[in-house]
Length: 432
Image (cartoon, rainbow, N blue to C red; front, side, top):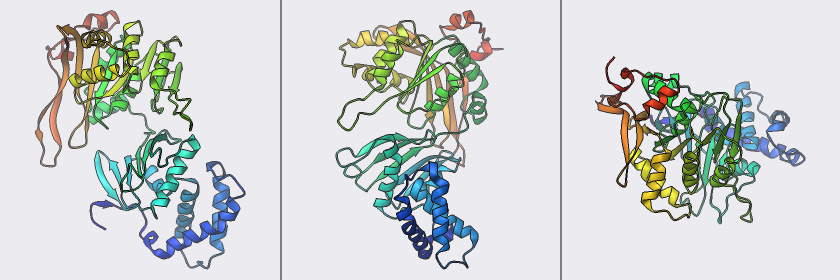
């Protein structure tokens, strides 16, 4: 075992004898399990079966703690997520990556680590994939070798198998945070400053249309969650997501989630379908988890026709790239629009872009807060209000820099004042 591998499995569990005992008690209870529906609802019953089976074996000299670990491990295989249970229970882990039966990685505090978690075989990994997918009415096979899913706690799961996954079955789990992050938490972590937080709060309450952009795992969903907490309690909010992640605190929330097609290919409900439907639900706010296709045009049109204060996210490497991505995804709607007309739609719909970035040291920052000013010729005009200025890298590899205002007051500042927010010059680096 090298220093770079984090150990989760007790050393004694790596002994072949312990694995043989576990397999044996599973064999012994299998006839009993065939008479019941094995699920989390009868966990205690299955556990009793396993404990009784263990007592029939000649292992009285084995410590009670080890016997309990054998039962827990067998229980995880039968009604849980097998070896992944240890990782799913660790609140410090953000992401779990299974690259076949013999390689399991985690992300913890922004860093990737290899673990000592192992599966018995590819069939063992497939068994856990089925455990994840089947309760949702989904499956993977040679014709449909990839799928997305969601665990009961809200964690996002992607699976891929042969032939698209050359090295065998792959599972990627983005864990759902049980502890909802607040704006104060983000300030403490250095993700944004108190001035930035207060400015964004004013923008949300004043019903600015806000797009959150960023690269993969940069904190877009977390920022969307934080901004959504600023929406006043009295407003009707419609949330639309591929997999429900938003943790809204308000009472008047309608949560909508996409639906995959049935086995025969019918019955799919897309983000675009839900955005269109939401317009008939008397929304005060529309919050879309992420736009990545034709629904972008519907969202822009909604923003332009009285549904102000909407929030959404998009994958992009910069605010300027986010505008280009909006153009590309809007054109996927199938409606032919001249690029100039589409850009005018974007510039009139959006007020603000909040750009998130996952830096090389694993930290997540709000690196730009950018106003969408309007059009200059055929170009959408952008102005940075806040920006992260990197100054260097520490000997420990930490990115050094400051989040600060650019010295420019936003053009929409009068709208903030009408909403009751008279932000002083110190918010924008214009003196105190």
